[in-house]
Figure (cartoon, rainbow, N blue to C red):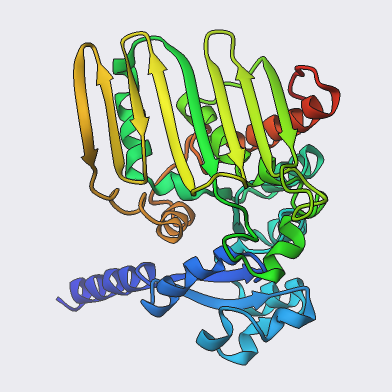
Length: 357
């Protein structure tokens, strides 16, 4: 009896450990998406064991300061990792800084989730991918649109549309300064090196990511793009409006990425020979398939872990789910995204269609 009781107690202890919140390190605090961590911290869904910030101005002055003890904030990324031993790190600094995070975390076997896009350049992305593969860590990319039930519904109904021939993806808002983004965010978001570009990167990545997912990881044959500065006085260093056309041979993808929309949007149209779907909001869709109108409808939220970036990261790190190469958060998908954005910038400079590198 004692033997069986011991086994039961050991199993329960194991389950208790497994059920503990994910131990997270935070790399950077200048990304305004950091606010997304606050509810998860307050609800005890994640355990932030350490926070690193390179800029001394923000180590003690950021959104996490009121929620965490002072001794959890570090000016050295390596020290934070070695003292706190997180299961994973989430990156909330500049896109250029993602490379530094991977260089520090990968050799220590620490998994990583960065905010979109994966990297500021193909060169950075290639080094990051090589490190992740060498050390066997997850390197995921977080997009708001991954958690949209409307996008999951589009993917589910894709086969009913017949042969696809066009996808149109529109993302953006009135502009980061116009909507009140913080100065610490704007410092790098509007820098061509630290962010990799303007609207073409900030919002062009969504369309590239969704197209790669919907088309099962395929890469376009050609990329053509037009980048504009409609507000040069506001954004003198980078583009604020981008049109990207991806040519897959049988499918054309139009990506409209802008800091000039009169109203914020993240919507998509998918066209096949037998029907079309309009993904209108995070949870609203409509369409027409094989002569039948699909009236506008609201969809329920996705079930965990596909409804939340931190739950998804936890499930991936702890082996509860597997991630396909074409999935929106996957390394392979996001390498393609970076290559598409690179091609778009090269096309805009030359005025010609270009191939991926």
